[in-house]
Image 1 (cartoon, helix red, strand yellow):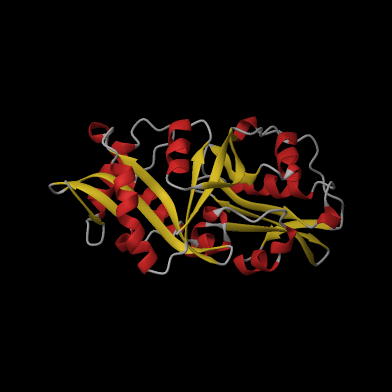
Image 2: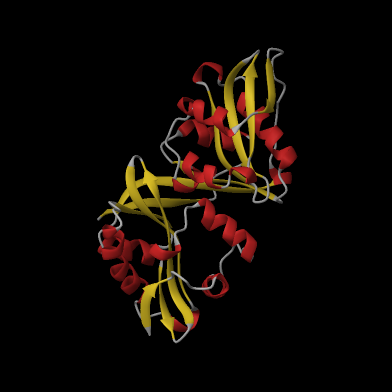
Length: 283
């Protein structure tokens, strides 16, 4: 057994370990989907680490590198251990091994999200110095289960496609700062995989929605406070669903303290599926 960087490791070996580690997970991804996912999250192979048994990856942490709220950050975009190698504290050993390399690369903090019902993982992270930064909801709903009671906009409103830059310029519409995977930095890495919809009051942009059609992932949806409760967010969601190629819609990592987004999603029959902790460890 040897712990080392994944630099130079063939991606097929990483994917095989990922598939084996998460074979019982409720959501499965193929190789192309995994590559898209970790690229969006800023995966840096030379600053990701694994335990090797001879030439096979048996436990791993895939790190994304970037900025979070202006701080140089490593993000845990996937940690797993092949079933036959569990119970050996390999994930903790990999984490400990990685810290000096992350610090040397100028990383100031480590960020991750963990399901709140995964109490074993939460306790492990607390023991190694992670603290809860905030609580996050995630929502998953089959397309046909989403219901719209009334989605007729007033005559002065219109929905049409916009650009990524238009969304960035309208960030002030958001009530909370996005999680790592939903940030503009993450979206920019794979912007060609997203569609951007805008709501207009005559020619003024007053709301936007960002959709990844292949995964059904709504990364951001926001409306200017002056134009809320007028059906604008509903119409943005209706438009996004027209282009969704997945059988369900996902809204992952909304701030639990943001009642506006929670109440809106519940109003269209998208109740919270569960909660996560966003946790940070200063390095």
